Length: 195
Image 1: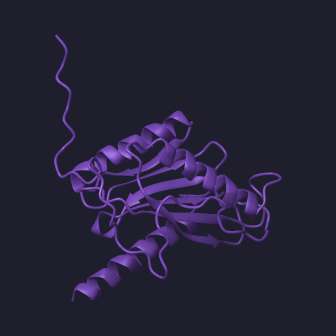
Image 2: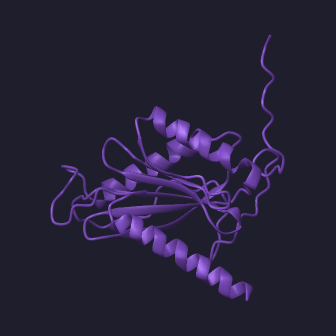
């Protein structure tokens, strides 16, 4: 029964990602024409990587993450990353808050926020048309996804920068790296007002 539930949840997450990308919610895909002049799929993949590196660079304490996958559409490219740090239910709001502030400071426009207690997410659009999502899935695992707008067709290489997490052969497991802050099961204390 547990494996069936896991399979259903994974299928829903994959379908959700495909629908979001395909419908243009994440990326501004315009089949048949280039939305970003002079950029090809490789350039878009590198831009997606830069967005992730900047985002995780703003998260303190540091989280551990790994590259998950790269997919290409008719004229877009999507990079996926998986967070291996255990982020407790009590800290998910803090995590997404840090990410949202970073994205707003970069000029990204909020498209959708899901305050779901179990699987919250936030989707934004960059000024140059990249759709970016941070979300939580099965067992509280956090994910990042960046989808490009329509760009020129080209081959796409693997990311150049090595992930800061360990390398996994085969399927990436559920989060397994503990953090004194992110894995804590107590709410973040609110500072007392100064008098």
